[in-house]
Length: 140
Ligand code: ADP
Ligand code: MG
Image (cartoon, rainbow, N blue to C red; front, side):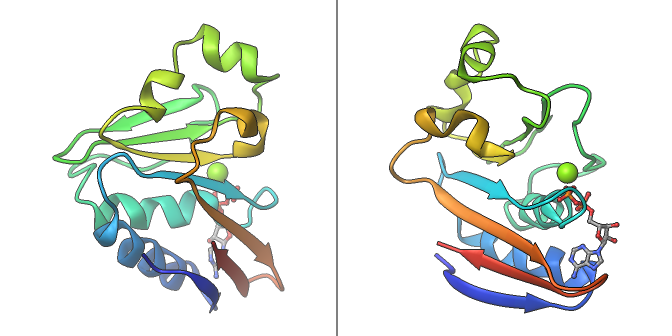
């Protein structure tokens, strides 16, 4: 698995980093993303979807109004945006914990809303905006 600090200078580079990571992910991987609005979380997940060959023919957008988008594939990708989630209880009430235990790949924007539920194997990615087009991306 790719780990460390990476600098990107445009959205395409962030997507490419996501694709590299996506290609190496084992079934059942969980990726917790943090970083401000507009940092590039959705952009990176777009790359992960390409890398793990999910979402063929599907548009990868921010699921802001739905909490969850599913991109089917051999390794399906479950793309969560928990920005509007109030807490762990809502996540559990919607039955979403099932996805964390599945064979698919889970990518969660604003994952700290459910930090208590994240498995030990979780890959953490923080994206920091340095200027309008530079991002520091930390994978741990
Ligand atoms: P988030 O999901 O974190 O709110 P998005 O991925 O939806 O962020 O949006 C990131 C925005 O920042 C896009 O408008 C994108 O074009 C822009 N951007 C500029 N430079 C970069 C970069 N190096 N990496 C990612 N996005 C970038
Ligand atoms: Mg987003």
